[in-house]
Image (cartoon, rainbow, N blue to C red; front, side, top):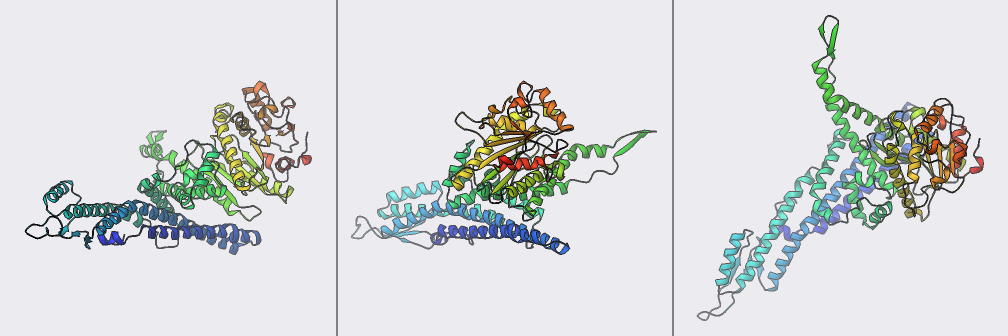
Length: 601
């Protein structure tokens, strides 16, 4: 692809060389991935765990920038690798056509010139004691010219002309096809260039996302030859599809479709994490560029209509209608993305490696975030925490009171201290449209939509664990507030043969689970746990009873429900994950199967 495609170039071209080059870029991807992980989970984690002060913070910032560089290398080299494989696949038919035409010519003792013409010897019936003379046929791809040439060859006394013309036309056709492939791919590969600096900016990340979109279209024919992912499939089908792919095919899907791969239940957690981190970085770049392009809010918000009468200015109203909502969404989403990155940056500060199992700032109205502390594929105990009303991407990292990531982190730390010889994974699962306020939290529609999605994720988590270890982990699902209602619906979302979705269920501040007894949740007797608190938690629980979120006016903290009622020292609806609390220790005891340590009312 360094000079115009002609006979000599195509004849010497080796598609396998481009495949080898793709392998080289894929090796660079693997190197960058290992280095990025070592920086984040090795060097930076060790630094956080051992040093404090301004110098340490400065070093961590520099390591963060270095990590971004290697992740950018990983993304771009992955795209180059896929582009080279796709080019090789696209040009291979033309190369085979050329080689076949040349082989046929040589088999007839013809000669092929450097321009692709085919020379043929004298042959046929003698005329005046002489064989009809030989000559050379020049190929063409013009159908009219081909018809004329075929007609002329039919009248020529030398039968070799017809064969030579056919070979020459096939050669010309192969060159034309290869030239089209070359012209198609050259600009796509040229655009896979990075700025000549060491800063990975929002523009760089947005450009990487554009490169990905560009290559998806260019590589369409190549991708058609790969086994497509199953549509609307079960986690088991997703896992079977992924593990049936070659390493190269897996790399191609990761490079071009990280959003799809990252959202597929049943795939390995490290694969989903890598895919979703790519989506996170690229969305951050695009969102930041879009936010930066929004003009500032007009300073003159109001205008006077008369003495003591004011109204919004036309300029401000125009700005509001065009930009205000989008600006708020972008700012809120970027805040949530920063919270996710901050969790990555806490690895080593008493926390294990984080796995981003789901991410989409536009999903479900509130954004999708699924983040695990520790690898659930290899965990002995896994806890999936489902947050409730007002949960959204923008609030995922808010303080001790509302921060769903922080709650999951404290649950991990407490569980790990209770079972130090076991591998623990705690997952924050926000993949449903949580009610935005109390009035909406009286509606069952949110749980109707969220429950089956939760069930699918839990099935996928089980599938990935079985592929990794050959066995299942002990799984606890924890629902807070309206999240417990989602958990209740999830238990009924499986088929008759699907079995229980978890080993234990814990609910805190539950307004109802759309069931009137623990036995309806499909678990073994004695493995449903509930806790409540005073003040506003009573309002939530009793309000849920009144609006019917619990069947027959029954909620999980009722004795008649049949669950284990745990002690709680929370003084409100949000305090169940307070550090060193009885509420938190009780949850950890269930998560680690230390049931004898659970304090019951």
